[in-house]
Amino acid sequence: MDLGLRGKVALVAASSKGLGRAVATELAREGAALTLCARGEKVLQATAAAIRTEIGAPVLAVAADVTRPAEIRRLVAAAMGQFGRIDILVTNAGGPPFGTFLDHDEQAWQKALDLNLLSVVHLCREVVPHMKAQKGGRIINITSFAVKQPAHGLILSSMAKAAVIGLAREMANELAPFNILVNNVLPGVFLTDRYLELSRARAERLGMTLEAFMTKRVEEIPLGRGGRTEEFAPLVAFLASEKATYITGATIQIDGGLIRTLL
Ligand SMILES: NC(=O)c1ccc[n+]([C@@H]2O[C@H](COP(=O)([O-])OP(=O)(O)OC[C@H]3O[C@@H](n4cnc5c(N)ncnc54)[C@H](OP(=O)(O)O)[C@@H]3O)[C@@H](O)[C@H]2O)c1
Image (cartoon, rainbow, N blue to C red; front, side, top):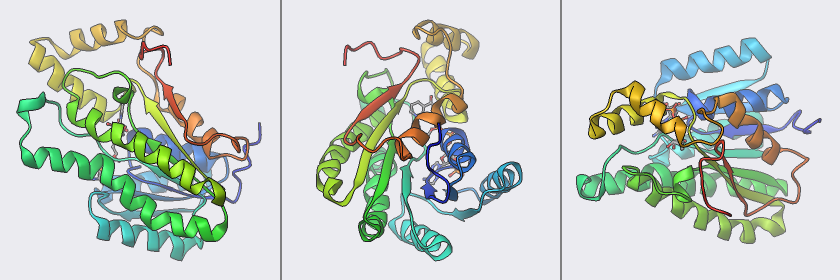
């Protein structure tokens, strides 16, 4: 299927590793030009170089922290300066620390909101005016299975990412007249650095080895394994594509069956 992404321009936030990197790579493979960002310059530049070499796609890499509005402004200005448009915005970030309600101090709650909710607001605030001027665009928010099915120790993540769903639903209505489609994807368990880090914290809290914890975790997944990042990325590419012109305001899980709800 030709996704019609050749010549499109994408900004994928938090994309030097993990899910963000996989999404950026998939979009590049489908013919999009990319702007990537992350805080760590070295890994970011290495990722950009790998995508340029493997795929030959135009890639701009900008070191930026998505919790800082001024850095988001600089990021979006750089992307516009380089490519002149942004057709696809993938909002993504790292995840907040493991812990239960009373473990987190005032600062931790604010940091989680800055990282996983307000980063989406600030990215969209900068990009949407350009999409409106272009008369179209796609916004895809990477959130978490935890917005549908709470998981022990992920309270900061559930809190901030659930709010993104509300934000996106309102934005989908407001932006539909401008042909800007807004959707959310909910990853389940994907084998990334973030997943390993969280699993270590959860295993320690439960007094288990990392291996024992990970074995127990995959037993909860009907498909019997964690996902590979390259299994995640095509869903985002599809939502960004010319084949997905009638999907907006949707929240789509990709989790090997992990979420047990009916809807
Ligand atoms: N993996 C899973 O199973 C899973 C499941 C559900 C939800 N999620 C969510 O999906 C998102 C991505 O997770 P992942 O597993 O792909 O994580 P990951 O492998 O640790 O990658 C995170 C990426 O985000 C960048 N990043 C982190 N904080 C940032 C910031 N403040 N500003 C800019 N870039 C930042 C990192 O680079 P720098 O550190 O250099 O900035 C890195 O490129 C997270 O919100 C996570 O909670 C993941």
